[in-house]
Length: 216
Image (tube, rainbow, N blue to C red; front, side):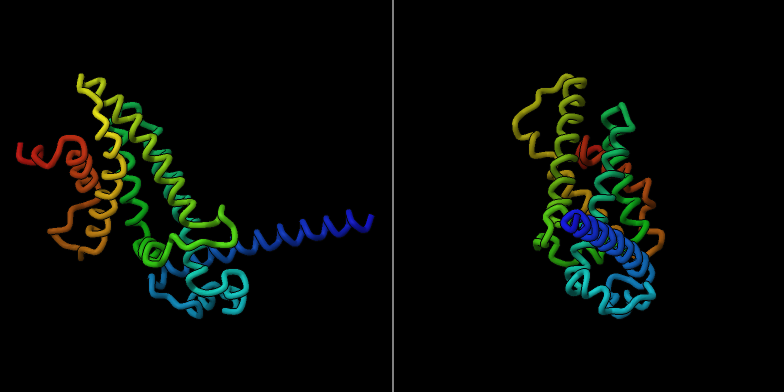
């Protein structure tokens, strides 16, 4: 009976810690959204109306919090971007949906985006499933496979061959969208900054038809 009781207490304590950790991450996410990517642990804990030692107890330091928050945000990106693609039957529309979803998520909270991407996301954590590198790799692997399938279907419908080099296109496309998206986020608001839909349309055209298509 004692062993059963101890196991039950340990399970309840672990559940409590998991729930509390998720709660602290959610509060930190809101704090960074409001305060900016340079928010300190003291500012984050104050905004969350809890003590700074609590955050240190659960995450070690600011970099630990950044990695944990990075895993949460990247997982959210992964689900939303892939769900956007799966909702479309047309291959071009699926790519446009993925590009649009990525830009929309980054635009929704640039502060949060820069907070989680400015640190060492490849650093390991005690739990591999909570590692941002694991979340990022899962995102890239799944979206690369999806884009490869979509691209093969697109080329087949267009009557084109599917050379081996095309297998490199999805990762190249991801890099292009991320680089363009971050440059776009850093632009000040004004007539020279394209709206989200215009940028998503342009990126989709460049990825599928090439930059030369913009001259026709």
